[in-house]
Amino acid sequence: MQDLIDSAPRLRIPIRGEVAGAGIAAVIVAAAFLVPQIASEQWRAKLYAGAAPIFGNWLPHAGWGTVPAVVIAAFVVTQGPALAERLPWRRLLVTAWSVAVAWAFSLAMVDGWQRGFVGRLTDSNEYLHEVGGVTDIPVMLREFSGRILDFQQDSWTTHVSGHPPGALLFFVLLDRLGLGGGMWAGSACMAIGCSAVVAVAVALRALGAEDRARAALPFLVLAPAALWIAVSADAMFAGVTAWAVALLAIACRPGGGPVAGVGAGVLFGFGIYLSYGLVLMAIPAVAVLLSSRTARPLLPAAAGAFAVAAVFTLAGFWWLDGYHLVVERYYQGIAAERSYAYWWWGNLAATVCAVGLATAAAVHRALARTRLRALEPASLLVAAGLCAIIAADISGLSKAETERIWLPFDLWLLVGTAFLPRSSARAWLAVQAFGTLLVVHLILTNW
Image (tube, rainbow, N blue to C red; front, top):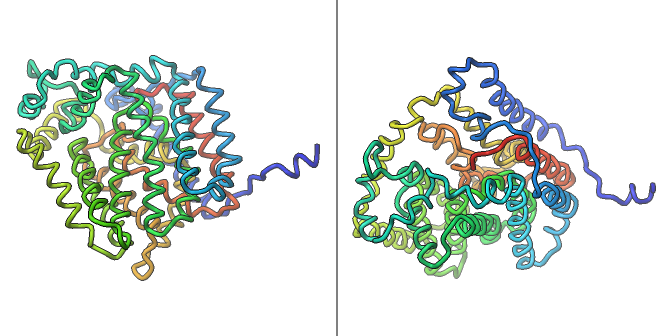
């Protein structure tokens, strides 16, 4: 027995700086959960989140996804770092995507097939509710802005009105391909969302940081963000924009060619027609260019992005009109009552829940490597993700639900885990797994 114990992988205690970072983040999260519980019922009701800062309700539960989720978590904690180091690159990427899908699906199944997966995108406020009414795509695009404001007979549902038409168009096209309904929509979002794990690794390798990509992959696979990847369109947004960054990184390499640059521009362009807030993905894009010390892909990327914008504009949707109307619609709803005094920091607590305490522990290490004389790609991407989150928070246009809304930015913050000491990787992965399993079994999330 002692021989087995001695041969088992050991979880080493992380050093003091990481523990301090994780501890500060944990205090913020604990405070964000505690404040609504001790506040007045009237104030708490105006948060419109029963388990604030997470959009959901307190309800301890388990499901048939519980056991698979625990098994997958144990596998990644014990084997993930070693596999990430030794597997050939392509096999590693396939393995990472497969395990990420299994992790996300298992977490969704804790809430059950209908509640946890199939039914999420078919809610009356969701995209699929409007798909059946779109009989003419050009007409939908021309009339889209006129249906954004609330209290009209033909107002779009909450999520459709809150985004440019690209999001609805995605699900309409999926339906036209014969892949209609919640199962196919959820599967598409999960597959594309989990591919973001691969895209981040590809971007880092293209920027000459394969060692950082391999170190971060187990954390990207086991990210608590998986709680919202199988159940929200924001996962698809994250996948699209992550591949935009990856293609831009490839275009920056010597001999990268204009095709990758145009592809990056097309995905960046389509991204801002999926969600208005994704204009902030320009920050990670700049980080890629800075770390590569080249502006060569700018012209082809701009051409690709402008081509997408031209298509939507000629079809009748002007992005700026949509944005201004969305801001007005935002304050027609519960956002007008939600307290910015709570949510500006509650949003950050929700983000910690999505990226995990390991990320909070690693950020200071990553940022310490950001120097003008030595522009390390991984550290710059972490800084870019953090800047995008701060900018989104300051805007006040994301009060609550940021655990899913900020998924496209969270991925780049998770890169910071690559800077954790290798000796403590398993310990921090265990922390990630425990926190995720705790949230999914204590809170019935709305997404």
